[in-house]
Length: 450
Image: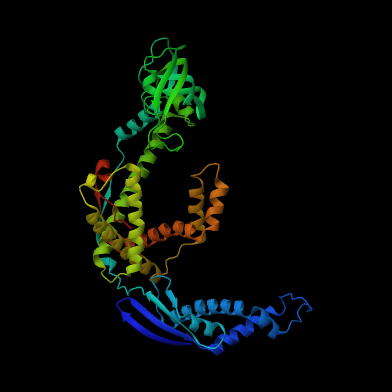
């Protein structure tokens, strides 16, 4: 194998690789010899087919297989020999001259190909001991626990039947049949369906048609499904609902006492308050961590400057841009609505893509240099957590991740990132500053966070 460097500019490399025809022939002969015990040809006993005959029958297909394998193996060996880390899988280009390819296939010519790639930059990691970071922290306030209890009470209302008209906040029990163009449609009918007026859980106009309803009323509600309704066959369609009101009930809020605690699966009201306090404290700790991590990423971004592989940045930009466009199409918004233009937005998100790639490379370098690993147990725990988010589909989700290495890698990546962040924070000078919970939950633009 002969390797000639034909281009070396910044991070870009281009190499011409030549594999001698004799080496290819040796590879073909070896493969044909392996096939001798496998092929079954009429007129020959198993394992007794002459190699020359196998070459005559299968020689061209074997050569194609050998060429593919040779290119894969030699391109990897070239990178290894040069001690270079490709930022992306190299682009391989064979000759477009059909006669040259034919000569290679027939064993009359050497195989030559060009491999183009970008290498990962050399990164001089900053001295983390010089990083000064401020960690914002907040404590749970008693009034926040009171608010949590109140929200829990509001979320566990019961409804007492009443004889009067239904008002906002009341629950109406109904039977209904929905029709489009006079025909009942799938999913458009129900019995004993509870509707709480004012919650907006039905399509626009439906709850309004139940205003001032009484038990025993029969109503016809004319409305329309929104244009963006998830069921495409219903989106934008006019519908008529024949409704029978079976019961009207007014809301009754439970009292905050030990009896309510038992409804929540606890012994005492103090247990409920303790659980709310823990949840609030966990939320504050998570927000504190997020802000500290954001500050650290800003420091890392400021402290490292190096050339970025164009292809990595371009791929990251495309990922971001496709998501932005998808979100805008779904919401029906435009760049003008955000007081910007597509050109300015592209420039901004390309800068964000560059920041993400830079931080990813820095974090990866720190992790590799300091032998920071993600063990299988940590990935399995993350997988179990993800599976729990899909009750009833656990096996489906488990199989998906086990059959898709890329999806599994997406679970591994944030674990690795957090471990690297923890490593840096151990070395950095971190001071604490007490703030209010409102301050801690302020959400500045974080589009550029890695």
